Image: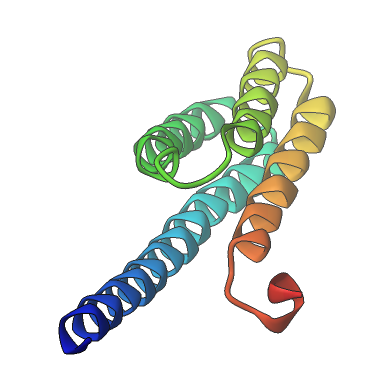
Length: 127
């Protein structure tokens, strides 16, 4: 009986620790990616094409790194929504349609914040 109880407690502790780690990682990476996208938003509002390209490359690198790790435990459908919005935004930037690019940028930020909220440990998500 003691053996089973010990194993059960170890499993529960492991699950809680891993859940806390993934929540912290999700919060950190989404915050960093959102920050990069907000910087890009500011450059889009200035219509500075050189800075826009630089900020876009930084945001894409940040997202690719985060996407690879988040894909282990977050629904792929949610991550694909962000990918789609970013690709659409990039095509609008390439065609210099900055108002549409800004719209897609806001869409991707919203989905990122939704992912963070959806995966957070809160009373709302438990029930």
